[in-house]
Image (cartoon, rainbow, N blue to C red; front, top):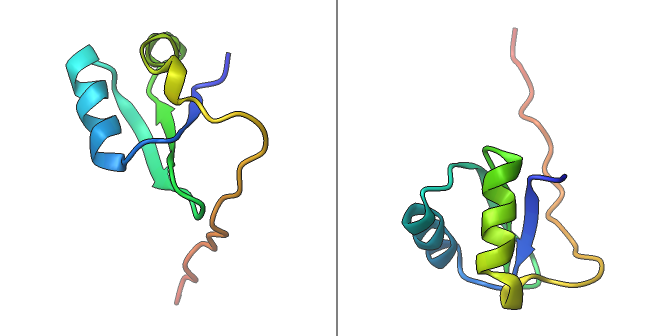
Length: 74
């Protein structure tokens, strides 16, 4: 089971909902076409959030920002 969810919600609302359900957030990122990608700390937490936010789950393919790791200057 994937720990990642794509939600059509504001980042602050997602954080608030996770806190209310006591679900840990591993990562959260804004998506270019609105919404957020949420990665929960556990698959159980992800399943809880899928159930609670079922109407806000994005369907289909979603685009993410291209993030490049910072270069090390060693």
